[in-house]
Length: 188
Image (cartoon, rainbow, N blue to C red; front, side):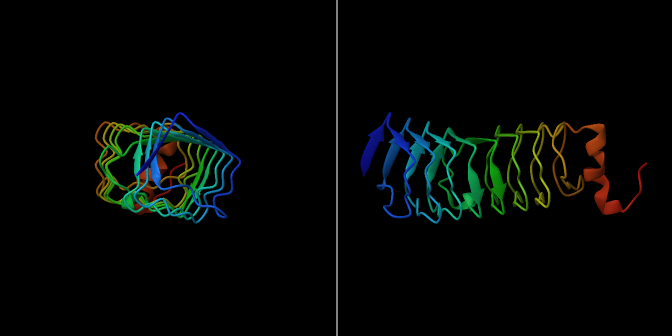
């Protein structure tokens, strides 16, 4: 497998010419279009994706280790298909819609200033993760480990305390409705 280290890739449309199947270490991808690309069996370690379009990216056995996504459009990506060994990433100012994190173990993940609509976190482990100023409209939390996670500035989430592990998770007073929604009660 090819190997790239400490390289920067700027404003490249990889729809026309696919990214070389390789291991990428400490690389930066800025303003690139990866929509519908196939990253199957690629490896990214300590890499940054800034302002990239990652929509419908294929991630079968893709290794994302300590990867940062900033200002990215990430639609319809199945992160559960990734290589789960060392799987770790963070998201800042991203649009993460209709993505699946089903059964992933992504403890300590930072989601910051991101729109996370209709994404699936069922049966995943998000312990000690932080959702800073995130909009979680329509996202699914079912049998999800959320212990010590922080939702104090998150909005539009629906989390059932009876089917999720939320011990010592943090919520704001205004966000408590997201924990009570299934009871169809009125709080004024």
